[in-house]
Image 1 (cartoon, helix red, strand yellow):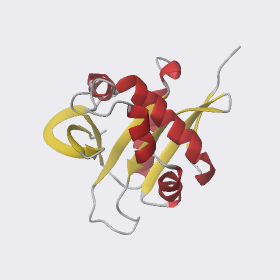
Image 2 (cartoon, one colour; image 1 turned 45 degrees about the vertical axis):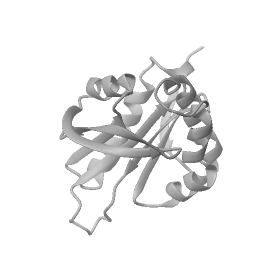
Image 3 (cartoon, rainbow, N blue to C red; image 1 turned 90 degrees about the horizontal axis):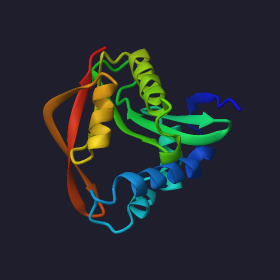
Length: 173
């Protein structure tokens, strides 16, 4: 049986599938990185369906899904802060990329990143940044494999009230 991969814009009705992918990825990737005992519960806080519905409808967000045989297996969430006529922002940001653990190793994440890059370039961004938790070597290796260069820039994100360092990658392609 052949598996077909489709990358498409997320719709508000995809909110629960996105939440489920995030929870599965966090449970797999973050148990040793986060202070919380159950990372999947933290993912559900971040990707609650109402927030996802809002972001899917917001033109400053790029929210794309990957589906294999009509099953959501991953998503990418990017932020494009300017409207087409606003030339003040030059950089679009890939905030998060998550792929279900059982769907990894087949190029799903790379397809999502390439689709987000394309969307950001179509919106006029010459520079694309990506962020990952500094302690998440899988994510930092992934962005490097996708052609992003690690910068000295650091960010910080808060999960469950705890602060975590993020590293920033840049891609000027």
